[in-house]
Image (cartoon, rainbow, N blue to C red; front, side, top):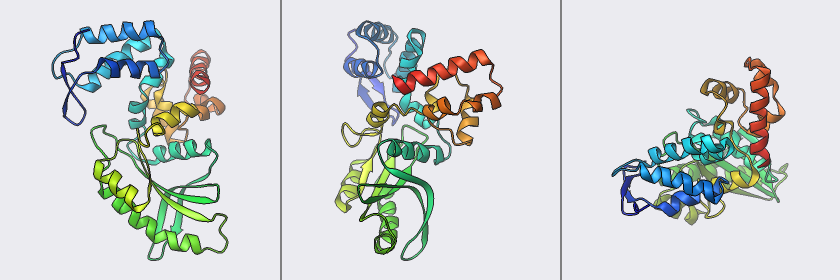
Length: 280
């Protein structure tokens, strides 16, 4: 276990010092008990080598967890599972809408809104406590990409165009509007500085601290179907194309598995996995 001075390679290409503590925390977060955590860490550490990628470390830990208990493996691969929602950003928009819906918002996806200058298709509109939240989602299919300052700059311009007409609408059922930028990766320092300066609400994988996407998904148990260790890639794509993004949806609308020709025995195993994720 003396590998804390080992240099590993992040997805961005940056070399950083390997942290056993960080690996342990990520395993604990998915629900693994201390004995299992230490066993997985010991096995992973034994296989480390200088320059190993964080992705390879993650894959090795995932494979070991899957052998132990698949639900822990599913939770552990959450970040990767969100990347698998691509290549279009629409399933990610549905995921964000679901997170907000189960947080008490009334939501709409892909609505056209007339601005002062032009009409805009807004990714997600969400109303709660008298505020209409105008939400734009920036999906990245590569974990090496960050959301740079150009994104909130562009989104703020769109938001400012629709803000006036929306707030002056006499038939509105809200008092204020608030612009959001949501990404599945991370914001650069300039993106955070600009977004906060102009009053946008920023939401990313780990921002705001303690209330980012990861924490919200875990707290609400709103896992995307791509975390499944039982569904094949083809089956996941079939479900995503039909708007089934959340495990909670598949648990409720299990007839989609019949359309896929899944055998009854396997169907029951998949639904058991969905139920475990929704109620864990």
